[in-house]
Image 1 (cartoon, rainbow, N blue to C red):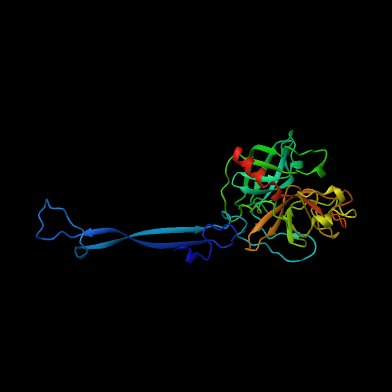
Image 2 (tube, rainbow, N blue to C red; image 1 turned 180 degrees about the vertical axis):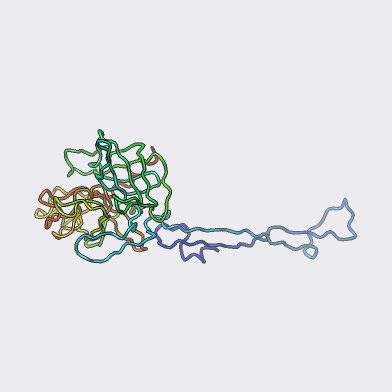
Length: 323
């Protein structure tokens, strides 16, 4: 049986290895009967054992194992470490990272991040979207100000904001939106899909994740040209909802990460991913940058708050299926 060759890899979605397996199966299905020389043409042939033999029929099976349909594994692995503070990302090491841009006076401006989750769908935050603006999505980018080979500029066909989103109350949650692109983008070493986490999965406290984006380098600081990454440790809900942390502002369909007063997401990172590596080495997007403290981007015990992607698994699937 072919599964003996695959180490459990056949159609397994949570493996970072992509392998091709060939299996040759033998089926003895065709039996050939030899007609005795003394038998007349109109006499029925008897399937005598001594006058018959089996001809093996071969079937070749090809099994391909894709890690969650090829998601979450960069061609250029990110330079991950437990360095405190944000830093320049390795170019193209977060290949699902998108730049959401709006048009004003004939020019385009970065406003939010996003995550490519299908070849024509980008995940972002609802608060990034305004019905009065025209948007585009840049993929395969590292430096937003440079011409980069392999990058793609995609137009938007439609934008679906969660029906329960209230722009006057970001703390109510549901800060999630999906952008459908007018055309499918071609995946490459610089453009890849992100993995989504299992439905309703919860990250344990102190899980090391990385927030990425072109947001401000500090409160009221400059916007960088190069993609940034920052190591954030997950803060569990029990801690994050304490009164001296975020209190009742944070909800169970959110993820808290950071709060050390040093590293955080900031303005311009909104809508971008919180990337967490699973046990098989693939990166899953567990969060969408939602909000931070009005006291500053790096405020102590006010971690960055993300929309918890695993809480909206069914909503994401429903929107894509219906559109």
